[in-house]
Length: 103
Image (cartoon, rainbow, N blue to C red; front, side):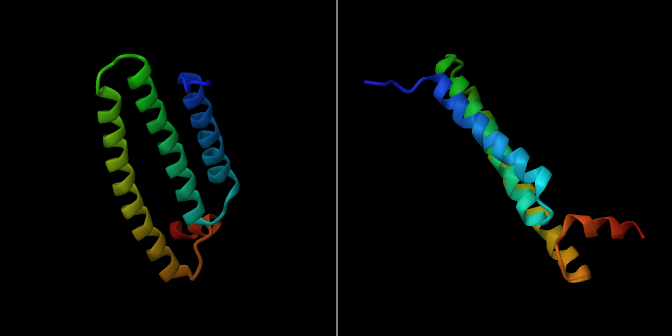
């Protein structure tokens, strides 16, 4: 019987992190970029919890993961407010159009 170990969690985390970075770099829609950032943060959470579980660090990893979840919720709320304001101003949410805010 196959037991799930630390390497399995790290593999899933690496896949999530790679997909998140791919989403951040290749997408022009601001909402999809935010989804990529959330994937990266979730990959970090998996690492925190996995190292906490398999490294015998107590509940430190879970505490850090909870802090990252709170941080991600605040980031999502603020970023979505900014995206809605950009949509109201420019009628689209392409990241390329955000550079026009300087003018």
